[in-house]
Length: 148
Figure 1 (tube, helix red, strand yellow):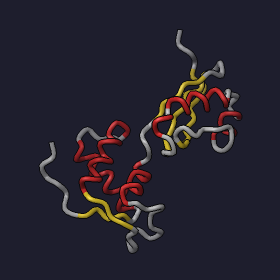
Figure 2 (cartoon, rainbow, N blue to C red):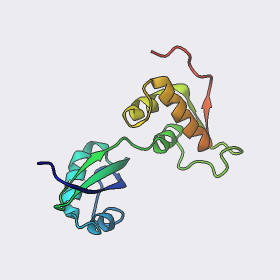
Figure 3 (cartoon, rainbow, N blue to C red):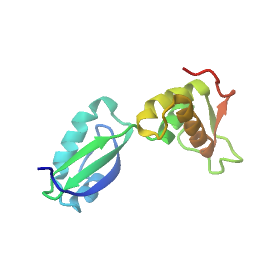
């Protein structure tokens, strides 16, 4: 018989660096979950992605057990890494903070593909480009028409 789901919890935690402090401890503690058990499991599963911001969706069961799914880093974080910037623009329509190429957009789209609501890489690229524009990051060049 399947376990009964009590709820879901979404967090963003740096890979390999989960600890009982903010944001993990208070969020899991309020649900009655074993904080150190989560931290140890998360850190071992994300040891190869140390320091990257990783969204995690935790499924909480009635018996206070849990399991979790680790998603790909947020598009905004990947865009800022590609543009080599710390943060986006305060006024993205007026002030541009950096630029990326369509090849970089394609790389980010391929990484994010499984978490995006898109079936083709070119659709995912348009989504990533839109996120970049909303952050004040310019996408250089014209959209490549012949994608495989």
